[in-house]
Image (cartoon, rainbow, N blue to C red; front, side, top):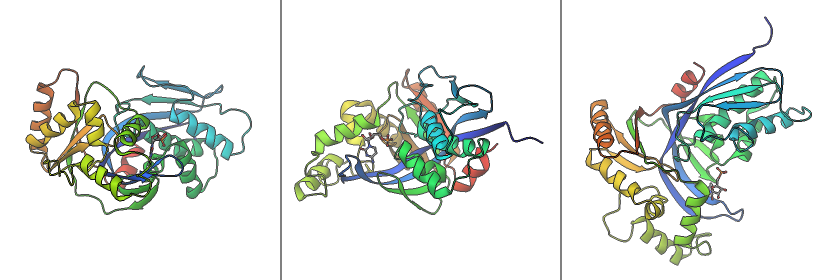
Length: 307
Ligand code: C5P
């Protein structure tokens, strides 16, 4: 038997069960405290050894297949880490894109993490897990999380990880309105609303402004918000707040924006309730896409990813 020539991997999406923005860091990124949670919505990737330049093929025309794709970045970084000369080659990556782009679901980051693992195996690049995590962090702040999966606390840029006990399984209704939100743009809106200056380590005024923004101290009935970006994103896209309310009305235990959006999710204990909510949400908006999925534990991610 020769070396393996092809690998198939599922790259699961995440939601953020909560997300606090604690301030602006000296490197310009935002200090975060978030809870990542894997869900059973996935891109399907195949990695096939084919002579010639490195290539990405994707069935979604909205997904770049050049160096803007984080899989490309993963391939370049790994190639260099393996001390290979020139540009990456002899590999075609096909991506069946199922995770909506710019949804706050980490699709591109999850693809990149899957690529790091699969390509290191196919290219026979021996690399420690610590080094893999550090390459992941270079690609993007939430890429290290996808090497882990399950329920994980993310701090600093979202890349300092600590495992949490698996959350009990929940059914997830995911609603993606007909637009995406870029992460950089959402944090820019946050800066405008809160002010970059005072947010560094939370002067009292900045904290007060944050409180007013997140609804925690303003007494406006928004105490359920646990994603600090939800209010600013809703200001630019009011449909986000309406979808959160709609999911709550449909009986979600918890509903929120995921990451920087645009996806909004609702959590349900029982599948039948989630199905009912998904049907109701589908009926009321033409341009939106509604997914019914569920949370995945770390073990489930590991087991299912290689299928
Ligand atoms: O790391 P990543 O490329 O995914 O981040 C995209 C953008 O989101 C960054 O350029 C930055 O503007 C913003 N961001 C941030 N703070 C974080 C994560 C991302 O400001 N913790």
